[in-house]
Amino acid sequence: MEAKTCQSCEMTMTEQAHFGTNADGSKNDEYCCYCWINGAFDDWCKDMTMEEMVENNIRFVLEFGKAQTEDEARAMLRESTPKLKRWAAV
Image 1: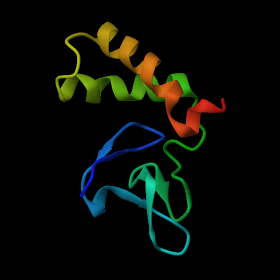
Image 2: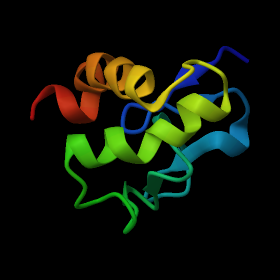
Image 3: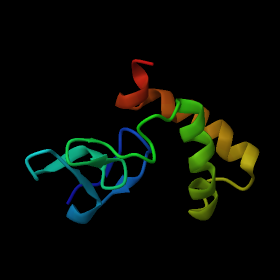
C-alpha cells in the first residue's frame, strides 16, 4: 500500500487501520483514523487552530526523530502544516 499523509495532522498512513472513516463507513484516504471519524473531524481536533495542531504535533516529530529540538520541530511544522488540505484554505 502506498503511504499517504493525513491532510489534518500529517500522520503517515501506511495501512488500512490508519485511515479515517466516512459517514457511510468507508475509508477516507485524506484523513487519519484519529482526525476523521464517521465523516467528520473528531472532537479532539475539530475546533483546533492550525497553530494548536503545530504545537500538538511537536512531540511526534521529536519521537520519530525528524527533528532534534522543539524549536526545529516547530519550524518544520510551521512550514509543512499550512500546505495540508485542511489548513490550506485557512
